[in-house]
Image (cartoon, rainbow, N blue to C red; front, side):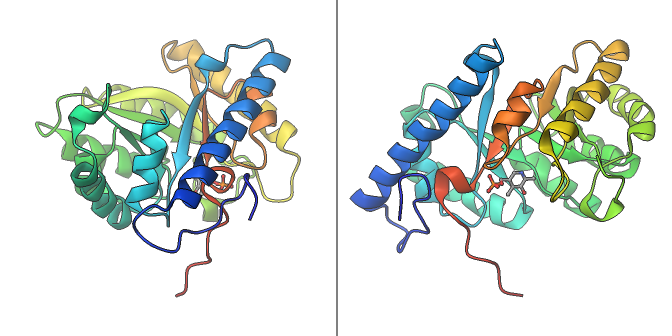
Length: 255
Ligand SMILES: *Cc1c(COP(=O)(O)O)cnc(C)c1O
């Protein structure tokens, strides 16, 4: 067990060891972000750290929140919904200066839209018109604030892993812009497996620039994970989604 990869917790209640590991990991990740920003002549405050907490318990989210990590990512509605409720119980709102912001980063079926708009501040994985309609309809009259939407772009054109092809991005952006329940924030991508992340994120930066020609406010770029956040920041990422480097290697799900 190293400071960078604290490993899975053994119990729900946080141990002193686990807390120390998370403190070290948050420090290490923040240092990586700061160094990458410095190298790119960017401000570290312009990069939001989204801690991807999938498979990890609510107690870890509470510890991260107390360390100032207030953006939390999840990739499954069911797991997220339960964790959001648990965190609220463990850590009443008034213990934080700002409430947590929960980000849906995983592939999303339209029939989960109603549930997701109940807990998420942002959805990073919007990649088709049907999902835009489902999210907007679900959000209608049920939220105080608009739901932030990132359009997930497929950088390798492979449909299996989610994401719209670059050629279909602008029509999808138009669909989001038409709905007042949604706020178009920008683009999101996962670098293709085994490819050069620099090339992937450079391509994403160009796609983002094209989107901003039509929608100047849609200036966010959700890119970079534990293994490639430096490359993403070099190419303008505003939201890095970090799981492993903060919380440890995930135990592979069974079934
Ligand atoms: C799990 C996940 C991450 C975090 O990945 P790590 O390599 O563990 O940092 C980021 N983005 C998405 C979409 C994910 O599903």
